[in-house]
Image (cartoon, rainbow, N blue to C red):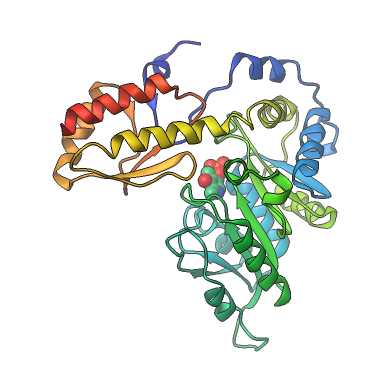
Length: 340
Ligand SMILES: *Cc1c(COP(=O)(O)O)cnc(C)c1O
């Protein structure tokens, strides 16, 4: 498995991991069928396993997190309905406006607090009364982790209780919910308590090549399955992919702590470098603020030393299963030499 990508230390995202030999073997060996007919054993196994792991009745395999979130929005909300969502939330900001474009669902964005949460008072204030002037507020959508920050269980309980008391459903964009659960030291079920649905990404820190799983009630998943077909997400022998996802959940969940440790070490060392400001990672993501006039030079040095980071809008570093402590030591040296 050598190639151009092997020569780079890629810290842009945890989506860049490549499947290990053992994962590929599991995918190779997967029993498959036609999943549009519900016949793919490996897809069914993944869905059953994920539903059980997170404490839901049912689950649905989707080709991406964007589609999985959209399926949830479409299943929870109808035309002219509204969902409350963070300004910085992926479902609002980074999914092409899919809820509005494809679902005629109006987002009501709410400013995120610095810890990533939505203030309870802001949520309450944005729930519209039953009046013909307003869209019908149907759903509260939160995200955990958000920008690598972990929302705590007490907050999540308060927010979901508030939503339910006011007649709203609750959805969690849990692209990185496994990072949150590991960080909080709780089970996946405990991490999603209070949410009517959760979207779990298999292709971020968990390291599978493709896919997300939407979990919810049987009725919600039946509805989501219909939308998935309409969106072109009905895949045939998808068990090849699902087997990678199942392997990831079973074998690469607990090791997420290593990514968190690596990020903490990395950020701690970078914080000693003069002239830059480093955020303290809670999980596997952190941000580095550098002087504007250093951007170009740093970019050149990173190119030369074959290190990739996200530079815009902010320098972001993400650790993952394909970044070892040695890789990180190397990157620290590169940053130290550049700014030193
Ligand atoms: C990556 C991500 C998604 C979307 O996942 P894709 O598989 O890239 O479509 C959704 N929500 C969050 C928080 C994400 O980080």
